[in-house]
Image (cartoon, rainbow, N blue to C red; front, side, top):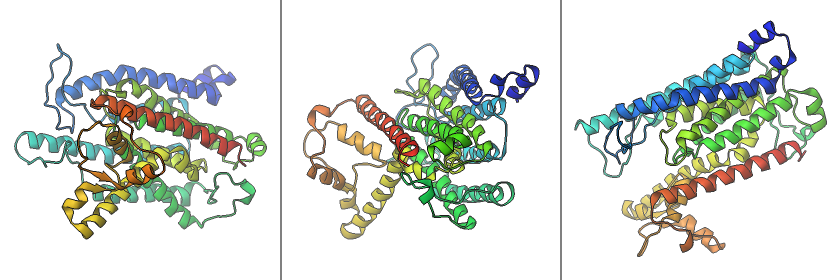
Length: 420
Protein backbone atom coordinates (compact mmCIF):
# COMPACT_ATOMS: atom_id res chain seq x y z
CA UNK A 1 0.00 0.00 0.00
CA UNK A 2 2.66 2.50 1.02
CA UNK A 3 4.85 1.53 -1.94
CA UNK A 4 1.98 2.19 -4.35
CA UNK A 5 1.23 5.53 -2.70
CA UNK A 6 4.87 6.63 -2.99
CA UNK A 7 4.97 5.61 -6.65
CA UNK A 8 1.72 7.49 -7.29
CA UNK A 9 3.06 10.66 -5.65
CA UNK A 10 6.62 10.33 -6.98
CA UNK A 11 6.67 8.15 -10.13
CA UNK A 12 10.28 7.01 -9.80
CA UNK A 13 11.31 3.46 -10.61
CA UNK A 14 12.91 2.97 -7.20
CA UNK A 15 9.51 2.86 -5.48
CA UNK A 16 8.47 -0.14 -7.58
CA UNK A 17 11.80 -1.93 -7.21
CA UNK A 18 11.71 -5.26 -5.38
CA UNK A 19 15.10 -4.68 -3.77
CA UNK A 20 14.10 -1.23 -2.48
CA UNK A 21 10.81 -2.50 -1.10
CA UNK A 22 12.48 -5.52 0.49
CA UNK A 23 14.99 -3.21 2.16
CA UNK A 24 12.23 -0.96 3.42
CA UNK A 25 10.39 -4.00 4.74
CA UNK A 26 13.47 -4.90 6.77
CA UNK A 27 13.78 -1.36 8.18
CA UNK A 28 10.07 -1.29 9.03
CA UNK A 29 10.32 -4.55 10.95
CA UNK A 30 13.48 -3.37 12.68
CA UNK A 31 11.53 -0.42 14.11
CA UNK A 32 8.49 -2.50 15.05
CA UNK A 33 10.42 -5.25 16.82
CA UNK A 34 12.76 -2.97 18.74
CA UNK A 35 9.95 -0.65 19.82
CA UNK A 36 7.29 -3.23 20.72
CA UNK A 37 9.02 -6.39 21.89
CA UNK A 38 10.73 -4.92 25.00
CA UNK A 39 7.33 -3.74 26.22
CA UNK A 40 5.78 -7.14 25.53
CA UNK A 41 8.58 -8.89 27.43
CA UNK A 42 8.01 -6.59 30.40
CA UNK A 43 4.27 -7.33 30.46
CA UNK A 44 4.73 -11.08 29.94
CA UNK A 45 7.24 -11.29 32.78
CA UNK A 46 4.90 -9.44 35.09
CA UNK A 47 1.92 -11.61 34.08
CA UNK A 48 3.96 -14.86 34.26
CA UNK A 49 3.26 -15.85 30.63
CA UNK A 50 5.41 -18.99 30.68
CA UNK A 51 5.14 -22.77 30.72
CA UNK A 52 8.36 -23.35 32.66
CA UNK A 53 8.30 -25.06 36.07
CA UNK A 54 12.01 -24.64 36.74
CA UNK A 55 11.78 -21.06 38.05
CA UNK A 56 9.43 -19.49 40.55
CA UNK A 57 7.60 -16.39 39.41
CA UNK A 58 9.54 -13.41 40.75
CA UNK A 59 9.11 -10.00 39.21
CA UNK A 60 10.64 -6.85 40.62
CA UNK A 61 11.49 -4.05 38.14
CA UNK A 62 14.19 -2.79 40.51
CA UNK A 63 16.33 -5.98 40.43
CA UNK A 64 17.56 -8.31 37.67
CA UNK A 65 14.84 -10.67 36.46
CA UNK A 66 15.19 -14.19 37.89
CA UNK A 67 11.90 -15.75 36.78
CA UNK A 68 11.11 -18.12 33.92
CA UNK A 69 11.51 -17.01 30.31
CA UNK A 70 8.18 -15.90 28.79
CA UNK A 71 6.75 -17.64 25.72
CA UNK A 72 4.41 -16.43 22.94
CA UNK A 73 6.83 -13.93 21.40
CA UNK A 74 5.19 -14.80 18.08
CA UNK A 75 2.22 -12.68 19.11
CA UNK A 76 4.34 -9.69 18.00
CA UNK A 77 6.36 -11.35 15.22
CA UNK A 78 3.40 -12.43 13.08
CA UNK A 79 1.63 -9.02 13.01
CA UNK A 80 4.96 -7.37 12.17
CA UNK A 81 5.45 -9.66 9.16
CA UNK A 82 1.90 -9.13 7.91
CA UNK A 83 1.90 -5.36 8.38
CA UNK A 84 5.31 -4.90 6.74
CA UNK A 85 4.24 -7.02 3.77
CA UNK A 86 1.01 -5.06 3.39
CA UNK A 87 2.98 -1.81 3.38
CA UNK A 88 5.64 -2.75 0.84
CA UNK A 89 4.36 -5.64 -1.33
CA UNK A 90 1.84 -5.66 -4.16
CA UNK A 91 -0.68 -8.15 -2.82
CA UNK A 92 -1.65 -11.17 -4.92
CA UNK A 93 -3.05 -14.66 -4.39
CA UNK A 94 0.31 -16.11 -3.31
CA UNK A 95 0.67 -13.59 -0.51
CA UNK A 96 -2.94 -14.03 0.57
CA UNK A 97 -2.31 -17.78 0.82
CA UNK A 98 0.85 -17.19 2.88
CA UNK A 99 -1.14 -14.88 5.15
CA UNK A 100 -3.84 -17.53 5.53
CA UNK A 101 -1.29 -20.12 6.64
CA UNK A 102 0.43 -17.71 9.00
CA UNK A 103 -2.82 -16.65 10.67
CA UNK A 104 -4.49 -20.09 10.95
CA UNK A 105 -1.40 -21.91 12.19
CA UNK A 106 -0.56 -18.95 14.42
CA UNK A 107 -3.99 -19.23 16.03
CA UNK A 108 -3.47 -22.96 16.59
CA UNK A 109 -0.10 -22.14 18.14
CA UNK A 110 -1.74 -19.50 20.35
CA UNK A 111 -4.25 -22.11 21.51
CA UNK A 112 -1.39 -24.46 22.42
CA UNK A 113 0.68 -21.76 24.18
CA UNK A 114 -2.30 -20.40 26.08
CA UNK A 115 -3.18 -23.93 27.23
CA UNK A 116 0.38 -24.33 28.56
CA UNK A 117 0.19 -21.09 30.54
CA UNK A 118 -3.24 -22.00 31.87
CA UNK A 119 -2.11 -25.51 32.85
CA UNK A 120 0.96 -24.14 34.66
CA UNK A 121 -1.19 -21.72 36.66
CA UNK A 122 -3.54 -24.54 37.67
CA UNK A 123 -0.59 -26.54 38.99
CA UNK A 124 0.74 -23.51 40.90
CA UNK A 125 -2.72 -22.99 42.43
CA UNK A 126 -2.94 -26.64 43.46
CA UNK A 127 -5.78 -27.42 41.03
CA UNK A 128 -3.70 -29.88 39.01
CA UNK A 129 -0.79 -32.25 39.67
CA UNK A 130 2.60 -31.74 38.04
CA UNK A 131 4.10 -34.90 36.51
CA UNK A 132 7.45 -35.71 38.14
CA UNK A 133 9.27 -35.91 34.80
CA UNK A 134 7.95 -32.63 33.33
CA UNK A 135 9.82 -29.32 33.41
CA UNK A 136 7.20 -27.54 31.30
CA UNK A 137 3.40 -27.51 31.32
CA UNK A 138 1.42 -29.44 28.74
CA UNK A 139 -0.52 -27.61 26.03
CA UNK A 140 -3.44 -28.46 23.81
CA UNK A 141 -4.06 -31.98 22.51
CA UNK A 142 -1.39 -32.78 19.93
CA UNK A 143 -3.75 -35.01 17.94
CA UNK A 144 -6.53 -32.40 17.85
CA UNK A 145 -4.09 -29.70 16.75
CA UNK A 146 -2.65 -31.96 14.03
CA UNK A 147 -6.12 -32.80 12.66
CA UNK A 148 -7.01 -29.10 12.49
CA UNK A 149 -3.71 -28.36 10.74
CA UNK A 150 -4.49 -30.91 8.03
CA UNK A 151 -8.03 -29.58 7.60
CA UNK A 152 -6.97 -25.91 7.32
CA UNK A 153 -4.09 -26.71 4.97
CA UNK A 154 -6.27 -28.84 2.71
CA UNK A 155 -8.90 -26.10 2.52
CA UNK A 156 -6.45 -23.26 1.83
CA UNK A 157 -4.50 -25.13 -0.86
CA UNK A 158 -7.55 -26.84 -2.32
CA UNK A 159 -9.47 -23.59 -2.80
CA UNK A 160 -6.41 -21.84 -4.23
CA UNK A 161 -5.41 -24.68 -6.62
CA UNK A 162 -8.90 -25.30 -7.99
CA UNK A 163 -10.20 -21.73 -8.20
CA UNK A 164 -7.43 -19.11 -8.20
CA UNK A 165 -4.11 -20.43 -9.52
CA UNK A 166 -2.95 -23.19 -11.81
CA UNK A 167 -0.04 -24.80 -9.95
CA UNK A 168 2.93 -26.38 -11.63
CA UNK A 169 2.54 -30.01 -10.50
CA UNK A 170 5.99 -31.11 -11.64
CA UNK A 171 8.58 -32.13 -9.06
CA UNK A 172 12.01 -30.61 -9.69
CA UNK A 173 14.70 -32.80 -8.18
CA UNK A 174 17.85 -31.15 -6.81
CA UNK A 175 20.80 -31.51 -9.13
CA UNK A 176 18.70 -32.74 -12.08
CA UNK A 177 18.35 -30.51 -15.19
CA UNK A 178 14.85 -29.06 -15.63
CA UNK A 179 14.38 -30.81 -19.00
CA UNK A 180 14.81 -34.20 -17.30
CA UNK A 181 12.33 -33.52 -14.50
CA UNK A 182 9.54 -35.54 -16.05
CA UNK A 183 7.51 -36.46 -12.95
CA UNK A 184 4.27 -34.51 -13.10
CA UNK A 185 1.66 -35.33 -10.48
CA UNK A 186 -2.12 -35.18 -10.99
CA UNK A 187 -3.56 -32.11 -9.31
CA UNK A 188 -5.24 -34.12 -6.53
CA UNK A 189 -2.00 -35.95 -5.73
CA UNK A 190 0.03 -32.73 -5.83
CA UNK A 191 -2.51 -31.23 -3.42
CA UNK A 192 -2.00 -34.11 -0.96
CA UNK A 193 1.77 -33.83 -1.35
CA UNK A 194 1.63 -30.07 -0.68
CA UNK A 195 -0.54 -30.58 2.42
CA UNK A 196 2.08 -32.89 3.92
CA UNK A 197 4.85 -30.43 3.00
CA UNK A 198 3.16 -27.62 4.93
CA UNK A 199 1.95 -29.61 7.95
CA UNK A 200 5.08 -31.73 8.25
CA UNK A 201 7.37 -28.76 7.74
CA UNK A 202 5.55 -26.53 10.24
CA UNK A 203 5.67 -29.18 12.97
CA UNK A 204 9.33 -29.93 12.25
CA UNK A 205 10.10 -26.24 12.69
CA UNK A 206 8.12 -26.24 15.94
CA UNK A 207 10.18 -29.19 17.22
CA UNK A 208 13.39 -27.29 16.43
CA UNK A 209 12.31 -24.41 18.67
CA UNK A 210 13.86 -26.00 21.75
CA UNK A 211 16.87 -23.83 22.61
CA UNK A 212 17.60 -20.10 22.63
CA UNK A 213 17.82 -18.85 19.01
CA UNK A 214 18.02 -22.41 17.64
CA UNK A 215 15.06 -22.07 15.25
CA UNK A 216 15.65 -18.44 14.26
CA UNK A 217 18.81 -18.98 12.18
CA UNK A 218 17.47 -21.84 9.97
CA UNK A 219 14.31 -19.77 9.45
CA UNK A 220 16.50 -16.87 8.30
CA UNK A 221 18.54 -19.01 5.89
CA UNK A 222 15.40 -20.67 4.50
CA UNK A 223 13.68 -17.30 3.99
CA UNK A 224 16.73 -15.84 2.23
CA UNK A 225 16.86 -18.87 -0.08
CA UNK A 226 13.17 -18.46 -0.95
CA UNK A 227 13.49 -14.70 -1.50
CA UNK A 228 16.31 -15.17 -4.03
CA UNK A 229 14.63 -18.17 -5.70
CA UNK A 230 11.38 -16.19 -6.09
CA UNK A 231 13.15 -13.11 -7.45
CA UNK A 232 15.22 -15.06 -9.98
CA UNK A 233 12.52 -17.57 -10.89
CA UNK A 234 10.03 -14.86 -11.85
CA UNK A 235 12.53 -13.25 -14.24
CA UNK A 236 12.25 -14.91 -17.66
CA UNK A 237 15.75 -13.87 -18.79
CA UNK A 238 17.41 -15.22 -15.65
CA UNK A 239 15.50 -18.52 -15.66
CA UNK A 240 16.47 -19.13 -19.28
CA UNK A 241 20.13 -18.39 -18.63
CA UNK A 242 20.33 -20.34 -15.37
CA UNK A 243 18.04 -23.17 -16.58
CA UNK A 244 15.62 -22.81 -13.69
CA UNK A 245 11.86 -23.53 -13.56
CA UNK A 246 9.98 -20.51 -14.90
CA UNK A 247 7.66 -19.04 -12.25
CA UNK A 248 4.67 -16.67 -12.67
CA UNK A 249 5.59 -12.98 -12.53
CA UNK A 250 3.52 -12.48 -9.38
CA UNK A 251 5.81 -14.84 -7.48
CA UNK A 252 8.40 -12.06 -7.35
CA UNK A 253 6.30 -10.34 -4.66
CA UNK A 254 6.88 -13.39 -2.47
CA UNK A 255 10.42 -12.06 -2.03
CA UNK A 256 9.04 -9.21 0.10
CA UNK A 257 7.22 -11.64 2.38
CA UNK A 258 10.28 -13.90 2.68
CA UNK A 259 12.54 -10.96 3.54
CA UNK A 260 9.99 -9.89 6.16
CA UNK A 261 10.30 -13.34 7.78
CA UNK A 262 14.10 -13.15 7.69
CA UNK A 263 13.99 -9.61 9.13
CA UNK A 264 11.70 -10.60 11.99
CA UNK A 265 13.82 -13.60 12.94
CA UNK A 266 17.06 -11.62 12.65
CA UNK A 267 15.80 -8.80 14.88
CA UNK A 268 14.23 -11.33 17.23
CA UNK A 269 17.75 -12.67 17.87
CA UNK A 270 18.44 -9.57 19.96
CA UNK A 271 15.92 -10.86 22.49
CA UNK A 272 16.17 -14.59 21.78
CA UNK A 273 19.94 -15.10 21.74
CA UNK A 274 21.34 -16.97 24.77
CA UNK A 275 20.19 -16.38 27.41
CA UNK A 276 16.79 -15.70 25.85
CA UNK A 277 14.53 -12.94 27.15
CA UNK A 278 11.50 -14.45 25.38
CA UNK A 279 10.67 -17.49 23.26
CA UNK A 280 8.88 -17.52 19.93
CA UNK A 281 6.45 -20.15 21.21
CA UNK A 282 4.17 -22.34 19.14
CA UNK A 283 2.33 -19.28 17.88
CA UNK A 284 5.50 -18.07 16.17
CA UNK A 285 7.05 -21.40 15.19
CA UNK A 286 3.84 -22.82 13.70
CA UNK A 287 2.62 -19.58 12.11
CA UNK A 288 5.94 -18.60 10.53
CA UNK A 289 6.81 -22.24 9.79
CA UNK A 290 3.61 -23.03 7.88
CA UNK A 291 3.79 -19.88 5.75
CA UNK A 292 7.48 -20.49 5.03
CA UNK A 293 6.79 -24.07 3.91
CA UNK A 294 4.04 -22.82 1.59
CA UNK A 295 6.59 -20.51 -0.04
CA UNK A 296 8.74 -23.52 -0.96
CA UNK A 297 5.73 -24.83 -2.90
CA UNK A 298 5.17 -21.49 -4.65
CA UNK A 299 8.79 -21.22 -5.85
CA UNK A 300 8.90 -24.91 -6.89
CA UNK A 301 11.63 -25.79 -4.40
CA UNK A 302 9.70 -28.33 -2.34
CA UNK A 303 12.43 -30.95 -2.68
CA UNK A 304 15.07 -28.46 -1.53
CA UNK A 305 13.45 -28.27 1.91
CA UNK A 306 15.36 -31.33 3.21
CA UNK A 307 18.60 -29.57 2.21
CA UNK A 308 18.11 -25.98 3.34
CA UNK A 309 15.88 -27.11 6.23
CA UNK A 310 17.92 -30.15 7.27
CA UNK A 311 17.88 -28.94 10.89
CA UNK A 312 14.08 -29.18 10.86
CA UNK A 313 14.13 -32.61 9.21
CA UNK A 314 16.69 -33.96 11.69
CA UNK A 315 14.59 -32.74 14.63
CA UNK A 316 11.42 -34.40 13.29
CA UNK A 317 13.04 -37.69 12.26
CA UNK A 318 14.92 -37.99 15.56
CA UNK A 319 11.66 -37.67 17.52
CA UNK A 320 9.96 -40.33 15.37
CA UNK A 321 12.90 -42.74 15.68
CA UNK A 322 13.18 -42.17 19.43
CA UNK A 323 9.50 -42.93 20.03
CA UNK A 324 9.45 -46.02 17.81
CA UNK A 325 12.63 -47.38 19.38
CA UNK A 326 11.26 -46.77 22.89
CA UNK A 327 8.08 -48.69 22.06
CA UNK A 328 10.11 -51.51 20.55
CA UNK A 329 12.38 -51.82 23.60
CA UNK A 330 9.38 -51.58 25.90
CA UNK A 331 7.59 -54.41 24.11
CA UNK A 332 10.72 -56.60 24.10
CA UNK A 333 12.34 -55.91 27.48
CA UNK A 334 9.93 -53.80 29.54
CA UNK A 335 9.50 -50.13 30.37
CA UNK A 336 12.41 -49.81 32.82
CA UNK A 337 14.86 -51.16 30.23
CA UNK A 338 13.43 -48.83 27.57
CA UNK A 339 13.97 -45.83 29.84
CA UNK A 340 17.72 -46.47 30.08
CA UNK A 341 18.39 -47.89 26.60
CA UNK A 342 17.40 -45.35 23.97
CA UNK A 343 18.27 -44.69 20.35
CA UNK A 344 19.35 -41.11 21.12
CA UNK A 345 20.17 -39.84 24.57
CA UNK A 346 17.31 -37.40 24.12
CA UNK A 347 15.14 -36.15 21.27
CA UNK A 348 14.87 -33.90 19.26
CA UNK A 349 18.46 -34.33 18.10
CA UNK A 350 19.75 -31.03 19.53
CA UNK A 351 19.00 -32.42 23.00
CA UNK A 352 21.10 -35.47 22.12
CA UNK A 353 23.94 -33.10 21.24
CA UNK A 354 23.49 -31.42 24.62
CA UNK A 355 23.85 -34.77 26.36
CA UNK A 356 27.11 -35.40 24.52
CA UNK A 357 28.52 -32.13 25.83
CA UNK A 358 27.43 -32.63 29.45
CA UNK A 359 30.26 -33.74 31.73
CA UNK A 360 29.32 -36.57 34.06
CA UNK A 361 31.27 -38.75 36.46
CA UNK A 362 30.73 -42.43 37.02
CA UNK A 363 28.96 -44.98 34.88
CA UNK A 364 26.30 -43.53 32.50
CA UNK A 365 22.71 -44.33 33.41
CA UNK A 366 21.32 -43.92 29.89
CA UNK A 367 22.81 -45.75 26.91
CA UNK A 368 22.39 -44.53 23.33
CA UNK A 369 22.42 -46.92 20.38
CA UNK A 370 23.14 -44.07 17.96
CA UNK A 371 26.15 -42.95 19.99
CA UNK A 372 27.52 -46.49 19.95
CA UNK A 373 27.12 -46.58 16.16
CA UNK A 374 28.89 -43.28 15.48
CA UNK A 375 31.72 -44.24 17.84
CA UNK A 376 32.39 -47.24 15.61
CA UNK A 377 33.17 -44.75 12.83
CA UNK A 378 35.54 -42.69 14.98
CA UNK A 379 33.05 -40.06 16.19
CA UNK A 380 31.89 -39.50 19.74
CA UNK A 381 32.20 -37.30 22.76
CA UNK A 382 35.61 -36.18 23.96
CA UNK A 383 36.36 -35.07 27.52
CA UNK A 384 37.91 -31.79 26.42
CA UNK A 385 34.63 -30.86 24.70
CA UNK A 386 32.42 -31.39 27.77
CA UNK A 387 31.13 -28.80 30.23
CA UNK A 388 29.64 -28.76 33.71
CA UNK A 389 27.42 -25.66 33.40
CA UNK A 390 24.24 -25.82 31.33
CA UNK A 391 24.66 -22.44 29.63
CA UNK A 392 28.02 -23.47 28.12
CA UNK A 393 26.45 -26.69 26.87
CA UNK A 394 23.56 -24.77 25.34
CA UNK A 395 25.83 -22.20 23.68
CA UNK A 396 28.04 -24.87 22.13
CA UNK A 397 25.04 -26.80 20.81
CA UNK A 398 23.40 -23.68 19.41
CA UNK A 399 26.51 -22.48 17.59
CA UNK A 400 27.15 -25.90 16.10
CA UNK A 401 23.66 -25.79 14.63
CA UNK A 402 24.08 -22.21 13.39
CA UNK A 403 27.29 -23.11 11.55
CA UNK A 404 25.56 -26.16 10.11
CA UNK A 405 22.82 -23.93 8.70
CA UNK A 406 25.37 -21.65 7.02
CA UNK A 407 26.85 -24.74 5.38
CA UNK A 408 23.37 -25.89 4.29
CA UNK A 409 22.35 -22.62 2.63
CA UNK A 410 25.67 -22.55 0.76
CA UNK A 411 25.10 -26.13 -0.41
CA UNK A 412 21.50 -25.36 -1.44
CA UNK A 413 22.56 -22.34 -3.52
CA UNK A 414 25.29 -24.34 -5.27
CA UNK A 415 22.87 -27.11 -6.21
CA UNK A 416 19.96 -24.83 -7.10
CA UNK A 417 21.86 -22.40 -9.34
CA UNK A 418 24.82 -24.39 -10.63
CA UNK A 419 24.17 -28.13 -10.57
CA UNK A 420 21.81 -28.17 -13.53
